[in-house]
Amino acid sequence: MMKCHFLSLSRHTLQAVALLTMLAGTVHAESHWYPSKYGADDTIGALNELNPEKTVRASGLVKLGKTYALGVETGPDSPAYSPRNYNVTVLQLDDGMGTPLGSNKATGNDDLMTFWMGIGSQIDGLGHMGENHVYYNGNSAKDFVTPSGLTKLSIDKLPPVATRGVLLDMAKLMGKDILPEGTAFNRKEIKAAAKAADITIEAGDVVLFHTGWLNVMESDPERFMAGEPGLGMDGAKYLASLGVAAVGSDSWALEVLPGENPTELFPVHPELLAKNGIYILENMDTRALAADGATEFLFVLGVPRFVGAVQSVINPVAIR
Image (cartoon, rainbow, N blue to C red):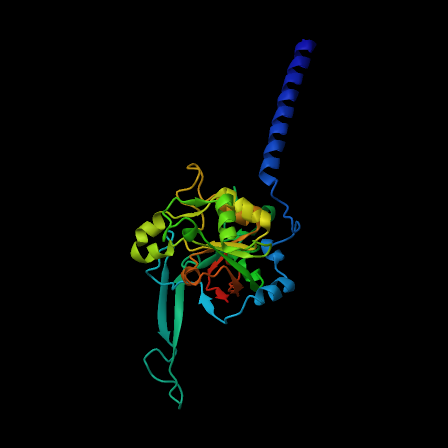
């Protein structure tokens, strides 16, 4: 009787130990990417790579005084990930009946906008995507995501960005005007494009890819949103190893679609955002830069300071 009880207890103990071991392994597997290399309390991720010296060096790239708007026009017809949309209502500033104000007969207009931040040219903040409700630096959604805004990792906390921008012309590298959907570029292709451009990607850089895909937005919006050429997982990990601040492309989701693994959905997003604190820039208009053969430039972005926002419509500027 006692012997049987002892054996039973031992078996249960072993099972419990095995379960705890498995759980410990699971926790380790899920949390190896946090705390962040920038510290357990960090909230801005790879923007820590920016510094005054980097900005000064980047400003030295300005030789021509030529500026490039990297943002596209955003409006009600902009292709967007469903159900995102854009609406604007213009209101008169007078008494509502068209009567001018004061003896000087002042008139004017105001606008009321209702739209999704993730439409048009945009920046994805670190609170945008994670894994299993865990976001950058181990922040759990229950601790910072509220219906009225993020209490941490929101874009209003981001500093101004003035750093070196790098353009990698993947379309030129692969000998096409427009890369077809499903075309992935990874470490090998990124290294080849950088070599062709005679540049070395450095920590704190903003890396932009030109694929020609933005032209499809204008000619075939449905095809544009159905897939895209883009960054693969190995490429994302490679760029993260270089310490880049942000990665963008002339496509709506940056990463290759259909993806490399059919069981995964948008895996590059959490790899960059959650695991490495690297910001994502989408629908960047790189056409003029590519046409001019630009490879590096001063990249300037003042992120709109919408309190609690996950992401935002932006119009960065490249200066050569």
